[in-house]
Amino acid sequence: MQGVTEVCTECEFDPHQIAHDQLGPELLQLAIGYEAVIADASASDCPALSSRPSPETWSILEYTGHIEFIYGSVGQMCEIADPDELAPFNGVDPDEHVDNAHFNEVAPTDMSARIHRAGEQAQAALAGLDSGALDWTLLFNGNPAPLGLLTVAMVHESHHHLRDITELAAH
Picture 1 (cartoon, rainbow, N blue to C red):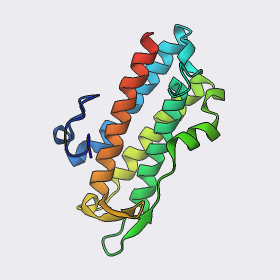
Picture 2 (cartoon, rainbow, N blue to C red; picture 1 turned 90 degrees about the vertical axis):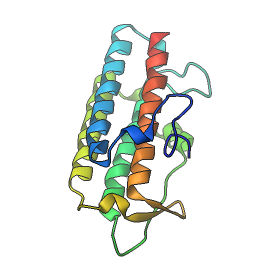
Picture 3 (cartoon, one colour; picture 1 turned 60 degrees about the horizontal axis):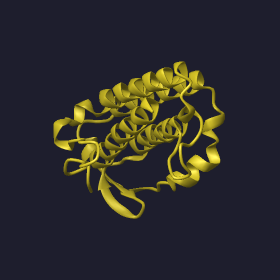
């Protein structure tokens, strides 16, 4: 999995540069980055804030709403992870979720508050885990995967999309 076990060639995320005890704080710092991009895009009346620049590219609010959902998934996975049971967790189709969630209708200040709250909740969920819990295995979309690896994948996705929205806001 690119970005989970090796450096991402697109966003340069290096999974080996983040310790497991830094996953929660990193998610919160990334959430703060999303808030900053939303504020900048809002202040500059960036059209990509709430409109797709092309049919296949989400708006800044859509990317942020997707990451808010990802952070919620971190919390859910932390809740169901069990050292003695292979707990199932199924992801959703991101495009379908974004299309149905109407994130472009959310006020930018509300989305900023939501992503910050989601970052805080993900950080708290990870901080509340038992020692060694990131090694516990979940059944993610039918495939066994350690909670730590799944969380690193979500940090990568958050990092990657922060780069995407930063580029959108710059145009």
